[in-house]
Image (cartoon, helix red, strand yellow):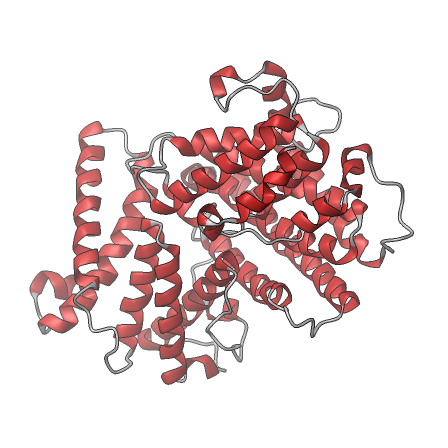
Length: 466
């Protein structure tokens, strides 16, 4: 495609498709590679270049006839457009474009693929489109709590991922596609408004999803450690990406456990939900601290973490502050909100998140002892200490290895909860004693989405202020 653009060897309509595909990929590449640049002149050059690609891609998107006869090239362009909207923070339009791509895949009969071996470049491109669309469809549908558009495939989407296993990010890409399979099953449970699935069956499905999530995460951690030991140079290139993967894992896991807690009304399961929510925010805080050399107006990693994954970790901690006035959880939400403040104007979805979390803080603030206005500079030292020791019950700062070890142990415990009776379990830990209030459980049963920022729900929830 790039060579055809340079030489102009195709008709203008085809070149338009080529341009949006190449430019959107170039935007992502620049954002990922820019932190490795040491020259400020080069950084300025690539910053300007990315802005040009972005403006040109948006202009071309408005010119491409999206309703034209389905073809592989048009499908690639629509998926690139969906990726572009994700970069820009317009998740609703990204979902709409993904839905259109899903319908095109059905029209082209690509969803019925049974042969996972790509023998030609065209077949490889088809497979790339199908697994990419599958990932976008399940991920955005879960984020926005909307029905998915792509029918079930005849093969597992990970079988369509053809990557060099030595590629530094190969495990990450396969991992997020595997997570999207979980999201599809989770979405079916969350959107079961007609109660066609019984509570016992729901609990069993969700317990199975916890076990599957742990297997995916464990596999990725093995790859992570092996890469660090065997290829330290490659490791240094992508070490900044792993905290984002931690957030993605714990975000999905929190959403699953939250749904299970809502079914069982189990305070023991609720405690596990709080643990995974805190670990999700810990991963996000680490990601913020490791992305300090970006050329973008907002950190690129946000486009595939907070902006793309469920908001359950933040909402779970918000509910816990409402129930127990937990200062540590309040300050975790406050710190993330402070991190987002400077980017609220640069990206529409980041602005919505900042608005949403600010409302969380406004509702929580009167319940927290010694609370100050949301400002990192005014935060008590003790609160900072608590934030840095998330998941460490002895209050000591743990190494990254220790955190991973504790996470694995906790996940094993979560898997074993599948056979725990919600009425005959052990006494709830002190940190969840405030969950006896039925109003808190009614609040906890909600699934958050970006649309909440503009919702009138806050007028109803103001009763918790008193």
